[in-house]
Amino acid sequence: MITGKNYIGNELSADGNVVYTTINPKLNIENSWSCTEATSDEIDRAAELSWKAFKAYRNTSQGDRANYLNAIADEIEALGDELISTYCLESGLPEGRAQGERGRTLFQLRSFAEMLKTDSWKLTSRHEAIPDRTPIPMQDLRKSVIPLGPVAVFGSSNFPLAYSTAGGDTASALAAGCPVIVKSHPMHAGTGELVASAIIAAAKKTNMPNGVFSNLNSKGIEVGVRLVKHPRVKAVGFTGSIKAGRALYDIANARPEPIPMFAEMGSINPVVITQRSLEAKGTQWAETYAGSITLGTGQFCTNPGLILGIASPELDSFASHLANKIVEIDPMCMLHPNIKAAYSNIKSEVTSQDGVQVLTATLDTENNFADQAVAVVDGTRFLANPNLHKEVFGPFSIIAKCENEAQLLEIIEGLDGQLTGTILAEDSDIASLTEIVDELQQRVGRIIFNGVPTGVEVSPSMNHGGPYPASTDSRYTAVGTDSVKRWVRLISYQSFPNELLPSELKNG
Image (cartoon, rainbow, N blue to C red):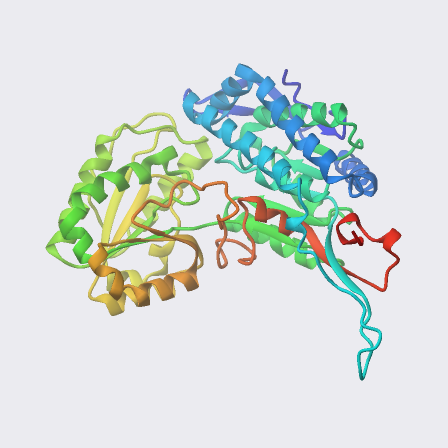
């Protein structure tokens, strides 16, 4: 049941006067429940409680933490149809997407529980003492990791489950031994509260300390800003826009004690298509990319927003076919009226730039349904105009027709950091792709060969991050079990009694 209240640890609280509702974007009406924004006092209480919980939670066994994560998955699953229907009412996304995202969320939680069965994620090493080494004896040294402390997690707008309340940031932080305070996203606060109730129920069933998890409602930016500034918060996980992510990153670094802020932000995910691929499979790739660009109404951080090719009749044919195929797909609902408005405004700004030609007719849409579009521009204008490099968050892509490979490489080199880069090529191209691969490696966190960037596998081999502004620290991933490394720090023990060492470093 949705109460609209905040979870301060295990207790519900609604002391504030700021009340708001979520929107049903399909019908463009308010949902029936209302939510109360957390007050400054409630934020402080949650932070202090999380710090108290941290002193106990950091010393729980990996087995106990694994049981907790599995219990969270079980409790989310037990929410059943209420969670699915609330998700759909608050996001405008279809039931199948809700069920799929729930499955991904459960899989993430259980993957971290499985990870905790061994110590391999702890980066342990040991060098036993060599007292007779000359000229200086070697001391016994052993290294492992310890959790940072309470983590503030910001729910994302485009994944109400997998990147939000019990998403990858929360699951990985809890696995690391860090309590979590979620700043719930205002667009799906009801969904967030239901998931939060499952996390709290699991904490009680597995005897986790009160304060290991809190969920705070927020209509505006104040709750998030206060959380990032709070001295009890020791790290931040964020998925969202460059503007919001950069603002929080600056706050985190301006604190008397700066803290790590792991933000996954904007990306246009360049796609390079070779001449041979255009000749052999141009029509096929156009159909495939029409589906990728419109998947989830284009509201994926890995949406292919830029396609690069060398000017040719085959590239023109590909562009025309892509435009025709993309308008054959029925327009779909966006997540919120504000997101639809931002999409329309930024798309208009990009397509009104000098030399840009829109290849698709304007579709007749209503409420918050998006009209998908494809545009084309020559490579020289794209290079000279940074406005064409902007992320258009929605079902839109621009094709840059390059003069030659040198210009194509120059465009890649001049891009901001990206989450993904894709190469569409034939086997006969492989020997000539080295320079393109080299340039993409410097600008992206994941390279796809003959595929689409949309879709992020939850796997230890996945990297979901990239050079700024794709993320604020390109050394880390936000997806997969390696994401746990964001919430721990290295510690060495020198000449320590065996009894005082953590279990993974003890003799035997």
